[in-house]
Picture 1 (spheres, rainbow, N blue to C red):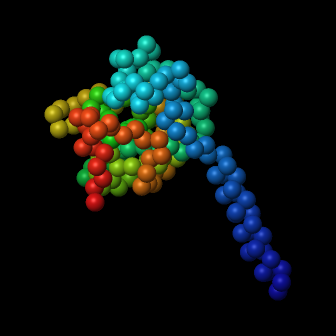
Picture 2 (cartoon, helix red, strand yellow):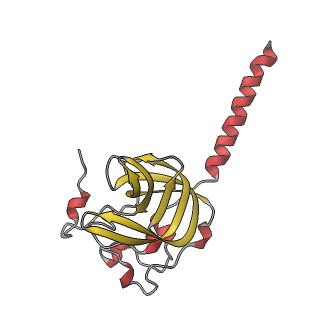
Picture 3 (cartoon, helix red, strand yellow):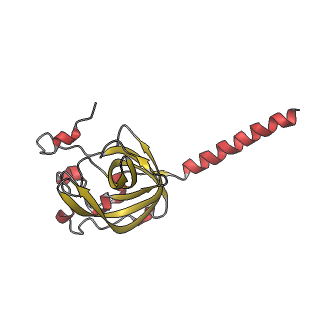
Length: 188
């Protein structure tokens, strides 16, 4: 009888070990990890940080994260959706990016395809994405109120796990004198 009780305990220990090793393989990264160390952060160049102001147009990508499982928090902007189900979205470092203000450089945009359609209640919903990061330029057509725009992303994450978060740790907030400061306000 005691051998039958030991079996579930051993299985539980194995499961815990597997879960711990899986989470150890996931690197929690920040937006700065996706750009070269020599590229200034958005705060230092003043928002909006746009590709045209950069010598490389923001196309220099971080290859040291290629094919690694990463976790990155940002704001989701739907690209392919049907109602509130989103099949693909752009993950961007600040609210308003791409639609209400100029587009960030490609190395600050991730094209995300969720493993399962993601239910999104609002544009720029703060989310955390986990999956294999693939560097490489891709273009997506984004439909906004005043027309369509082609957005170039520097990275993709396919079959991503997506969860809502309350805070994006390294989010850029607009300065008090910014015309986009209304985007800082939280919906209550």
